[in-house]
Amino acid sequence: MDSDVVLQTTNLSVGYGNFVVLGRVNLTIRAGELWFVLGRNGSGKTTLLQALLGLLKPQTGRLHRQVANGVGFVPQRCDINPTLPITIREFIGLGLVGTALNRTTRREYLDRALGIFDLAQLKHKNYWTLSGGQRQRALVARAMVRRPALLILDEPTNNLDLAAEGDFLQTLTDIHEREHNTCLFVTHNLGLAERYATHIGLVAQGTVIAGPKSEVLNESNLDRVYGRGQRIHLHVSPEGSSDLHAQAPQ
Image (tube, rainbow, N blue to C red):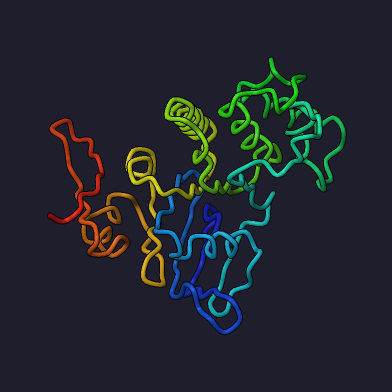
């Protein structure tokens, strides 16, 4: 496996018991790439996520992950009891639990995460007093504080309004460009994937269609994902940018 490969699957099959949810999954995620994973509800996105996180063992095939610092995970919502008072600094520091870092290094990592996500001025505030967008940034900072080889985000914009969603994604992409970190972003939103991704994974028909955005995000593949009930169009504007939209058959 090349040194820049963060995660790789080879003919991976995953499921529950003897039931196969996804098969023939071949993914190669390299350092610095920004992946978006799309698929309909029930298509197997959650199963794929559990396998990549190491929570679900492969039935067949192989999965290799870069060992250094492992995988950081951002869930859809906070998993802390809302009645528990906790400062932003304490909340982000939870991401360092279980590491062998000394006190000085822990402080450096924590201060760096606070700075990257523009939360340093808020570090003594209660997590639950912040806006939805600020809390979501803190969730990502908690996952990134240990500098994982791969950051996986599970539909992190689901509970945000449009303005907060735009701010969050701009922050994420700015950090990606500056830090060259590797991300895998699970979402239902085709438009977000089209705008921000470098690589796409489409979960459909019991497998994953994966590769560079320019190769994967086309009408034929989108028809495989969304079926004949909706006709998916890829519209390319005169400026060269494109917008994805769905149109029901007439």
